[in-house]
Length: 392
Ligand code: ATP
Ligand code: MG
Image 1 (spheres, helix red, strand yellow):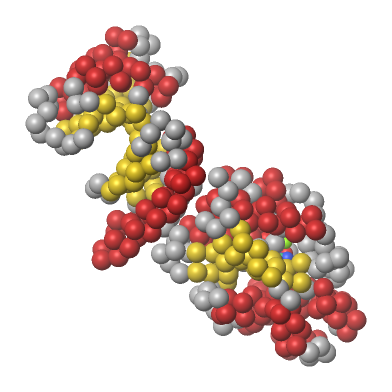
Image 2: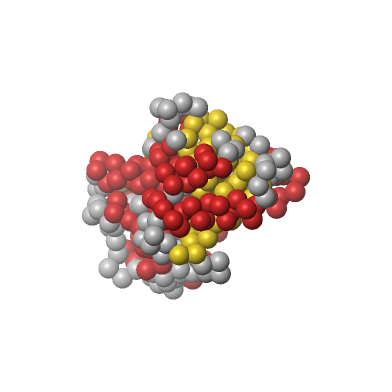
């Protein structure tokens, strides 16, 4: 039996003149991903992308799985295709649908006839298929008002389509249709979630990770690469800049008051991310900050780090509780990696009593004990890029 995927797109339909561009981007993403699963044809038809395997080697399960992580698609139906003939339709329905109907007590059939040359009208088709399923599966009942599952039969130009409900797509907008932003990616729970949330709005990611070798380890770095690849399953491939803060942190320890270490370090991070973002054409920064979560995320602390960039800083977790962030992390599959216990550059040399209500003038006074510009430039000169590829 031949199975295809029908992908419905959401908001992009609303985009008027830009619609074509959104559709093209979405198709390009799907075509790129499809290459890993065999030979597929991807075509458009009325706010739907139709993914059709071209031979028996094409992996439709793999394609379904990856399509459900593509932003811009709100729903995906797996769908059997057969000849436009009632015998073939009945036979295919009975072969294909039981897997979807298992455990369901009530159903109804909805039919649509786009090809008006088909001899039966939609009502007749629904009645025929419904009756046939009822007699073949005795535990089923029809409920036209509140069915547990709706079976769809569509008579289209090239054949009859049979499917039972839509699976939820990833939603959002196609990545690349809304600019590019620089994600500050740590090994924690929050920043991968932040990257996912902004990519969902159509933003192409680029990343920066700060480490402090040898105070942070090779394994801590590997963990961040793993997290980045997990985010890339949704966000697509991206470049991750790896920047060492070792020298900066050593200088901070030698020259500044301990209470200010974290704040000063965060100012360096924002300044470096800002430079990299400008150099690489990013229109914003993304962090996983959540208001009040830790000392460096009080309103005042964010207030002293924000001025280090002229770009908008997107903080999609800012109003979420930890539990809500964890929920998203579990859903997108980053949580288990995030909780592996490796050190982060923020956790080495942490002050015992960090300032929670810092005054900007005091922070600047501390910062002036070092040659800020030279240290920033040195860190940027020493950075390298790790290409993060979407894993299938
Ligand atoms: P996360 O769970 O994302 O690590 P957190 O709760 O540990 O966040 P902080 O350590 O205060 O919070 O970091 C706040 C934000 O700063 C992070 O969400 C991330 O965007 C950025 N950040 C922190 N450490 C790093 C790092 N080593 N490399 C890149 N960005 C970082
Ligand atoms: Mg962290």
